[in-house]
Image (tube, rainbow, N blue to C red; front, side, top):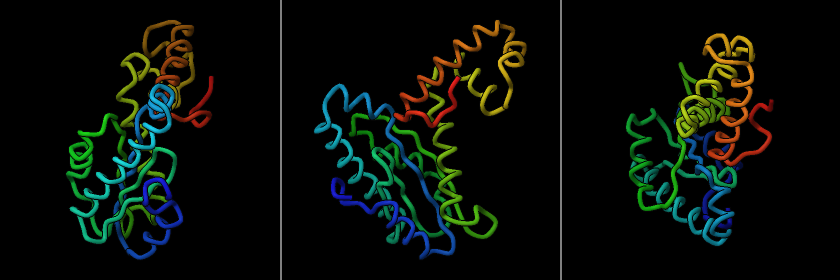
Length: 193
């Protein structure tokens, strides 16, 4: 990646093939689009470079073979061989305290008795990251999103379960999806009403 000096998705694929088992932590900057819109892309680029440096330090502290990759605009992956360190999320959050953003982190492992490979582990980590981003959504909206999209309830069943009107469920769903999109800075990847 020319901006950060990190490997990209292709480099992640190559590195993941070197290890029979490993772990990943997917790191997504919360509300990155808003940061770019408010302060400009130059500031956004500076934040991405700072994140790359700090995440690289975390990866190196964990394992000499640990690596960091930038796989999307504001998405990074720390990958390494062996088992997932239990304190990895805490290490990431601690390392990023000086950077003026918050992040959502999802972790996963691959190898025997785990996800079958790196790409399956990435899917699991991405799901974990979305769950982490849900914490930034107001509780009423979060409840509706969980019931609708994680539990698979329709509008009427969600309204009955929460003891509210279907209109309220629709309104809270729309607001919750907007808040989640803002946290993840994605468009069109999360269910539409």
